[in-house]
Image (cartoon, rainbow, N blue to C red):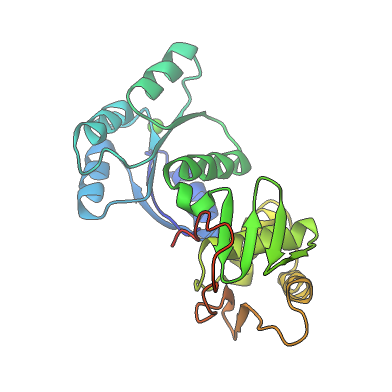
Length: 244
Ligand code: CA
């Protein structure tokens, strides 16, 4: 789910690491080295999420969070505080300032990415509601069942996650690297060709003879759910939507 993320961090080594990993996960990342710069960057372009270091030169992270929450235009921006302060009272203070989550340094990239996903799920339920619908395909995250029209489709765990990623952004083309990060995780080394194998399996499971293939292969770019795919005729559950 490519998001615009603002990283506010004065330790260069850490901000570089964050930029590297978050960009690889498909996000557009900007960096601010202190609180003043962060507030200016947010005025310029509102991010989907702010990763906010607590201890910053000039305006502290807590003060940045407080100011963002005090203004209508910026009140809803999700904030995750990153801090070396692990004491309970600090965490409580951070969360009471209005941060959506609080992560203690040092943290792993896998944990950070999971926290980011959890925060975005809360603030943008459309992206990760329990039921996603695309044309005649319905994916139910609670029961992990998939239907195409009236029949149930059986998918392996990798194909399931692949479909779940694609269905969050119909039409959006995901590169093989982005799919690797989202489906397999960025800590795992898997060859990009593996993506093709699993897309092949997903197609085989979804498509019966004569049915239209909902997946587009975009040469040199990657895969997408075909946004010219016909919307579902009639309505069965009508729950959710694809959130885009
Ligand atoms: Ca710092």
